Image (cartoon, rainbow, N blue to C red):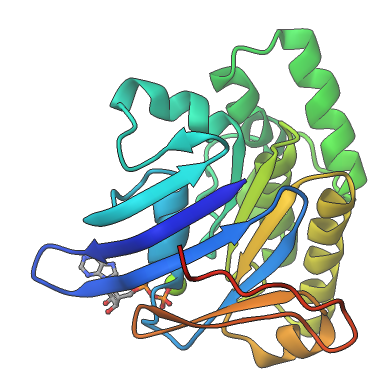
Length: 233
Ligand SMILES: Nc1ncnc2c1ncn2[C@@H]1O[C@H](COP(=O)(O)OP(=O)(O)O)[C@@H](O)[C@H]1O
Ligand SMILES: [Mg+2]
């Protein structure tokens, strides 16, 4: 699903956010991406949906070469990727239903399909009674679930979540992780960026760790079959 070969990302001003990162993520995997603040987690996720271009190296996502992707091909790529940011970026003047419908409208789904999918996704996330509310009327946890519904409504092959539990209390964080695990069980490849050690301790998944832009660890939790460490290409 994802392959990085010697990826470097250097921002204007000279900061190298990613240095010689090589890794692969298979279809259906659930991967944590960790590292302290400034390590490069968000930069890596942004590369995966072509919000940034690498300054060196090659990057394949869902069979597409992101290093060379044309602007006109980016919308189709993004249709296959659900993205959850820490700040939810909901449209505050639209209803919950309208917010969650946005990716389907962009994808050109019919009005009927949109209504069915939005409804079933919101119901699955416990928001069936919130369809016509505006985000402002919802709690922080509910707003985050709306953002997740928006990311999952298209059943994307790939889900990228950037600190999805960052501002939430532990109980809500557990709900969010359950929802993401459920998407993974339905076949979505998942990458969750987090620097929250309690999350890493509670859930046992493959762990990629960045430090100052370098990949310094690629580990499976004890008890799972070990995997060949990718890094030499
Ligand atoms: N748009 C940008 N322009 C310049 N530097 C940036 C930009 N975004 C992030 N950085 C820098 O890149 C490094 C990695 O940042 P980031 O990917 O946000 O790390 P993390 O998500 O792990 O906290 C940091 O030094 C950060 O200051
Ligand atoms: Mg970040």
